[in-house]
Image 1 (tube, rainbow, N blue to C red):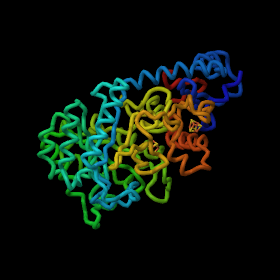
Image 2: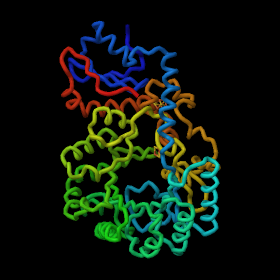
Image 3: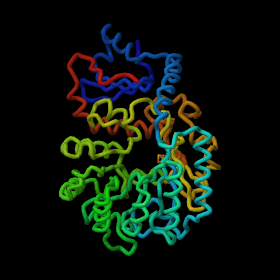
Image 4: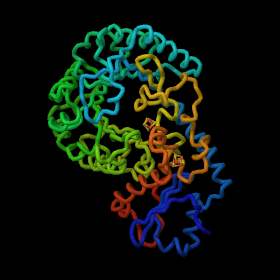
Length: 447
Ligand code: SF4
Ligand code: SF4
């Protein structure tokens, strides 16, 4: 009996292959000889792990997986990005919002209408208040000619028991502390980006006049922690700082932030799907995840403090091999690619218009008519024409709609497979440590 055509095979060395079954998540290491001549007990094991599933079996399985995914979605928070301004006092060469930068600010009237629309949406969908988060975003959201806007957002959130996250470069936090102190009950956390040790951070995130911002950003983190606020320091890994993460770890350690109960460190890739340009700052998801695994293993002191964005293509593989310990990368089939596509993120620009995701601010191609708009860009792989029959749909989740728009000739299946194949190649040595001559090794449990 032959393996289903949907099974993904990766040659590890002359004697072993890695098998990945997108129909139920199975991952196994198989001696190459068994692919030519399969002993009955190996065939039985592979049968039990769904490697021979018929089309009908696959369809039935997909419906079951939809349920798994829907159960998971019950607890996902909603994020409503509210842009207070499109202005910024930093001039980051890697910024993806350069084209939208302007002096446009959120007015009280537009803010009121945004709050009303979120409230209506919450009510219509029966979303509990604890799942509603307002994300203050920009530009730099704390450049405000009228700080009353900030106060009004915090007050509106407080009246509705929502939480407020502020995504800020940190430079102006000190000017707004009294407002935040007064509304401490709704302040979830501050996301402040520190992208490397001083020289590296400043090359990526200088002030608009080119001056260093490093001390001000680090000072803002110190100040917020001293005030008892939750800080989620962010580092966006790209070509320009991948090699410097060790120095940043050293700095964080010396600062004593790891001992602070309110400190967390979120590390993400710089992946800009509208602008995939490896000549600039892009690194592949595979290289980023490989580096994070190294950091995780070499620095046990960071565990519990270090958090990762959910990986777009590699979460299931990383979790299956336990390469990030107990850290919960998403377990289960991917029915959507990212949180905006699953309908959990909405971005309100300063004029109150709603956009698909932060990468599409003020881009008419990605403007939503409203929060309740049913939108094909937000449908799951089971509804999308091209994705429903795709052999790797549950590992991909439907791809990035922004990437598809800007790279119309892109073969998304080739792309998704190349991301997974590159990572398997990078981790080959680690995978082979588990291989056993003449034995089928099952790496994980099925979805
Ligand atoms: S690879 Fe392409 S067709 Fe397959 S699920 Fe992803 S986006 Fe859809
Ligand atoms: S659609 Fe999703 S993956 Fe694509 S740019 Fe927006 S948030 Fe990122």
